[in-house]
Amino acid sequence: MRRSPLASTRAASGSRLPRRHPGAPRRSHRNHSRPARLAVPYVFLAPALVLYGAFMLYPVGRAVHLSLFDWDGMGLGVFVGLRNYADLAADGALRASFVHAAVLMIFYCAVPLVIGVIIAAVLNRGKVRGLGFFRTVFFVPQVIAMVVVATAWAGIYAFNGPLNQTLRSLGLGFLAVDWLGSYTWALPAIGLIGTWVEIGLVTVLMLSGMAKINPELYEAARLDGAGAIREFFAVTWPCVVGETAVALTLTIVAALKTFDLVYMTTSGGPGNSTTVPSYQVYYQAFRLHDVGMAAAIGVALTALIFAVNLVVNRLADRAEA
Image (tube, rainbow, N blue to C red; front, side):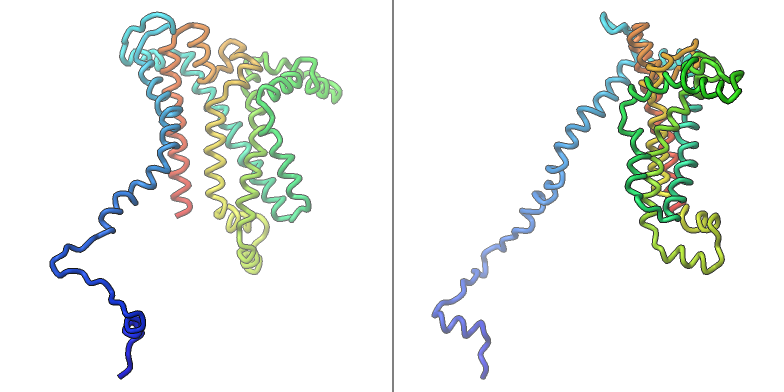
């Protein structure tokens, strides 16, 4: 009879494997270690959750709390409930600041998206050499401090600045105006600065998305007789829906939280023609010493940003499905 390897090992070593007593309880390591295994992810997440709670959730909660008080930032506050929100809805100047932010969304989001997609599609289709160089050039406005950008463009928009001098040299002097001092043109002028800043971000995002598209999809479209425009809408655009959602999210946030650009160029003027919610938060808190109203504007702005981005991401998810 052929002996098993285990029996041969026992015979060679002269030892016997320990046996469990029939009445002894089974020792289960699995049950004892399961709670520990479940706790491991939370242990690793704890530092990030603590920082997020301390620097994000607590400030938001504190702002909501302050928005329920009439407080000048120094003495004791008086609880007024939702009165600050009622005043916000009733004040025409404060409502206008949100309208101005909506106008800036066109310049920060819609225009850069159209231009950025076109530039990215041309560079991607043409297989331009030195693509990394173009990415860097387009992205430069994103890394320049907004204070520097605002100062430079304020000089360009000055009445005797390069823009008006160019118009005069072309015989279009009648178009020369004080761009940042005009009730009509101040807000669009600020919006165009935002367009210049955001085009690079959108272009880089779209280039990264188009680089991941399978070339065989383009070949199949060309075999079906698709031209450049049909190829873009049939292949390129559906494949960059995710990047489009990211671009819209980032540019919408940038448009709605604009402060330094407005502060450095017009300070909300002329009149209230370029005030935006972020500037109103500063103005109410540090100029009028109405911290409760400033907090209410901040909470309303946060809710607006969250709602708009939620809609954008829901639409993007449906488009990808």
